[in-house]
Structures are given as C-alpha cells and as structure tokens.
Amino acid sequence: MIDIDTVTKYFGEKLVLDRVSLRIAPHEVVCLIGASGSGKSTLLRCVNRLVAHDYGTIRLDGVAVDDPRFGKTGLQKRVAIVFQSYNLFAHMNVLDNITLAPRRVHGQSRAEAEDRGRDVLARFGMAGFAASYPEQLSGGQQQRVAIARALMTRPDVLLLDEITAALDPELVGEVLAIIRGLKDDGMTMMIVTHEMGFARDCADRVAFLDGGVILEQDTPDRLFGTPQEPRTKAFLQRIIASGRL
Amino acid sequence: MIPTAIGGISVTVVFGLMAWVVTSAEQWPRIKLQFFNIDAMIAAFPRVLQGFWVNMQVWLTVLACVLVWALVLAVVRSLRAPWFAPFRLMVVIYIDIFRGVPALLLVLLFGFGIPALNLPGLPNSGLFWGAVAMVLSYAAYVAEIYRSGIDAVHEGQRAAAKSLGLSEWQTLRYAILPQALRNVVPALMNIVVALQKDVALLSVIGVRDAVREAQIYTATTFNYSSLIVAAGLFLLATIPMARLADYLTRRDRERRLQIAG
Image 1 (cartoon, rainbow over the protein chains, first blue to last red):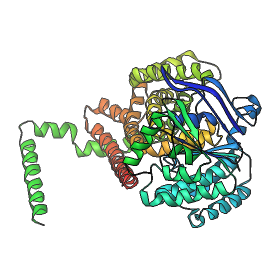
Image 2: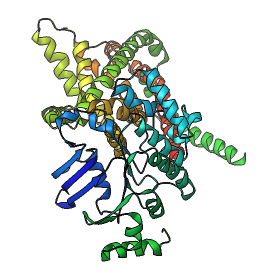
Image 3: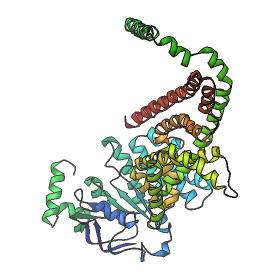
Image 4: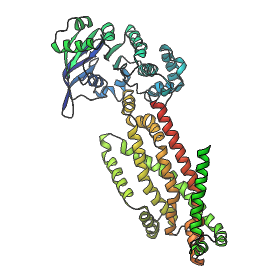
C-alpha cells in the first residue's frame, strides 16, 4: 500500500530523516515511536506531502506521491491526516468544518456533503454538535470532529500525528476507542504516538525512530518485550520509568 | 459611593479652576472674540456644515476603496507560490513608497498634478484625484494591518487546509482570511477614525470641505470662529467612532480570553 524507500529530508542543514525505508500493507496499522525530534512526525507528513522529502521515493499503490497523476488533490483524497492540536477551522461550525473539502475541493453539493457529514458525526457520537463551534467543544470532542473531517472523503490511509498528546488524560480513551474501531473496519493507518499501551494492543507493527533512522521495527510483542537495539531498550526503560507502559 | 463622590468633586474643582484661570487671563476677551465669537459661528455654520457633508462623503468612499484595495495588496503579498515572487515584490515596493511619502504631498501631487495633464478619458477633478491619493496612501497602512492578521492565524490552520486538498487560494479564502479579518477589526477601527479627519487634507487642493469653507469665511472676516465650528463638527464625528473602536477592542480581548481560558 505505502512504500517508503530510502527517504531523506533536511530542514536547512539539519538532517531529520536519514534514508528511511518502511512498507505498510493494506489494512495494516503501524505505530511510529521515538523521542521528540526523532523525525516521526516529519515522516508522517512526507506521506501526504505536507512536507516534501528531498531524496528517495514514497509510493502509494506503486505511484510516487509527487507523481503528476495524482493531480492537485488526488493524494489528499486518499491519504488523510489528523493533527495533535486538532486544527479545526476556528470560525466554522462542526458541519462546515467537515464539509468544506468535499464541497470546495471535491465538488459535492451542499446536501450531499452534509448528509454524509451527519452520518460520520453520528458514528463518532457527535451528531448533536453539528452547529457547535470548535471553541465550545472539549479537546476530545474536537479531536473526534477532526477525525470525522479526515474521513469525509473515504481515504484509504489515515495518518495520525500524536492525536492524544494535547488531550487531558481522561479524554484520551474516547479518542483511542475510535481508532480501535477504525482498525476493526480495516483502515490502513500510520500512527505517531506516545501512548505505548495503545501502540502495544492496537498496532500490527511498531517502528522505533531515533535520530531520523528507523532503528528497529517488529511486532509490538517482540519490540516491547525483547528489544534488540540498546537505544530502543533505553527509550523503553525511560517510558517504563515514567509509568507510561 | 464615597470614592465616586470624591472623584466627582475633584473633577469639578480642577476643571473649575482651569476654566477660571483661562477666562480671567488678560488676553481672554480677545481670544474669545477671535475664536469663540457666537455671531461668527452662527454665520459660518451653514457653509461649514455643507463642507463637512463633503468630508463625510469622501471619508466613506475612500474608506470603502481602501478596505478593498488593501485586501488585494495583502493577499498578493501573502501568497507563497514561487512564481508569485515579482508580484509580492511589487507590493513590498508599493507599501514602502506610499507609506514613506507624506499623505499631504501625495494629495498635492495627484490633486494638482494629474488634472493639469488633461488626460483623455480620465476624470479631471481635483476632488477625484485627491481622493485617489488618500486611497493609495491609506491602503499601504491597511495592507500591513491585514498582513499582520493573516500572519497571526496559526500555521496549523494552513496545514489542515492543505492536507484537505485546498489550493493556496482556497486556503486563504475559506480558512485564513475570515479569521484574519476578525483579528484586525480593532486595529482597523483606529485607521477608520484617523481617515475620518485626514480627509480634510483635500482642502489644500481646493476641495470645498469643512476646513476650506471655514478658511474662506476666515479670509473674509479675519475671525477664526469658523475653524472652531469645523473642529467641533469633526469631534462630533470622531469621538463616537473612537468609542466604538474602544468597544470593539475590548470585546475582541474578552473573546480571546474566553478561548484561552
């Protein structure tokens, strides 16, 4: 499904991704873990071209993400992203937030987009909030709307960038429950997360990034149980010490 | 209750003293005759008021043009596509020039200079070209205000729009500008008030506004009370606008605090 092949990315002089390769099969859920600044969010953003990588190739079903065949919006329709800070449009209500792209980018009528919008909202328990503005919602509710917005175009791949990191602890569960539901539906996902417990029981595979390199990738049981690399061990021990695993 | 009373008494005493000092000065009767002559004021009032009506019409027209033209400038300056570079540069140069040259000079240059050219197909009135000069000058400031509002919209909003497939123009139109404009309302209100009185600059090119009419009266009677009438009319217009600006600023701050809290 997604084939990341020796991708390198510099921010100015700084090397943030160093010949990273990673393959994600259809319906697979891959969690990216690692310390802040290890390049995991950048890798995620290269997949939907929010960030343009410098060297290497990223392919979606065999077609490079920078291939003109995707046109201006083809990639964004198939690969959606949810951000840490929700990034809902502050001046629009919930329904307008999630129907903006279907209407303005994909040419759906208002009625068509809003019908689907209400369905998606209902699925995430947000049916009663269509007319609410983001500032009137809790963090967990905002993140559920952001997920709904990402799913409006029926993407094949969902990228999740630390989507629970900005939430109060008691709100994390409601968002993670949605992600588990999406996994059960067979959604292909790349997930950057600090929630090791979630990575452990939701991921098919976990990749540990350090200094822009994937040091180790394996099933969650093996990576968390018997990590091979000293740096992975050290990272996991720090996490255990802080009580997050 | 008691602090209010003390405040009231204090204001009365201080202002009373000041009024007494001024009116008991040796020169006061002459000042009163020159500047606050009731008969002269009444005589000048109709014409000054008529001129003031011109001021208000020019103000609203120029204001509408400034808000639109400045938005065009700000949008061009904030588009990031590489091939837009020459247009961005043009806007930067425009803003440098029109913000750097005194508005009065522009009014003289346009208001006297262009009608003298007798350009075919273009209006020949000093009023028109003077107003154009005001628009060009004020738009430079307002464009910078718009731009600060655009820059203040969180980068995450752009990332979200881009990730949803919106083009750069759609991102500005649907995601960035509505938020940017709401952010800059308080700053714009100060410009609105400043423009309200600066339109009097057009009097120097012969536009018969309140100031010009008052000057004409002064020139024939050697009495300056007509200028005080014009000043009073400007205050009547600008003080409510300034209060409105304060109110909008306060409301905006409360809105931000609510979001932050």
